[in-house]
Image 1 (cartoon, rainbow, N blue to C red):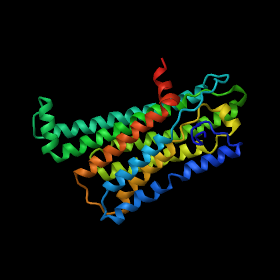
Image 2: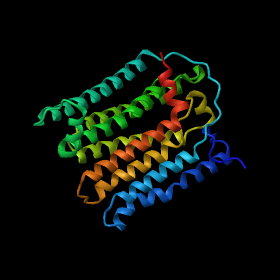
Image 3: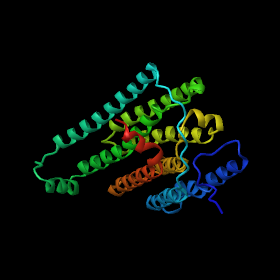
Image 4: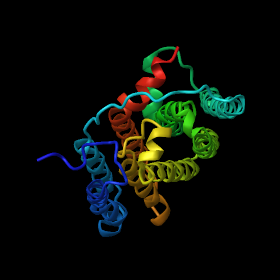
Length: 293
């Protein structure tokens, strides 16, 4: 029997595919419910939610199967206005990276210690709490920023059928609006390297934007839409983004006293999310961006 969730290119006009999509989407509900519930049941401990989220990520990867590739439609170069919009996104994204590195450099300069060898860095991480916290959040920022930049670059520079040019421009413009919000929240994340709570807040808002965009794309894959916007994003992005939102919401719902473990938990979840993100989106999204000359 064919896997009902194996084909990425869902035709909304096909009732069987719609039923398969609903089954696939609701199959993640236990993870959605348990992720924010476990800290309440187990003395506000985060580690059980970490396991639940990682299990949900793994389920999305297990469900993943590469769909059949479609032939390229007739293409048209992007208009100059869209190129300008993409450039604005790139400017804000570059500013976010510069800001994050600048904040981390300020932390290093404020340390009352000389760093001459990699061993000195390792010793500082184990003995200097602030340096450890800022290092983890910087790594978390780049873990999130890398797939975000690559994905937005791809979908902001896609090509569409010339017969659907007007609709394609509208879809592209809406994509830019959401991508612009992504870059803004990434920038604020870069300014929050020294504050765990603020970092999680901006990451939370970033993931809300990602989830809205993924769900919007998922449920608007009609036959006509697919002609003008190809390829569709991986459906696995939806549970991956939603589960991360629910995990981050734990820090808002419960009064958790932060320790070094919480920084590790966050970094592990972000790292695994990025790995799975690249796995399910490599062929259809990320590889295409890297191949560009």
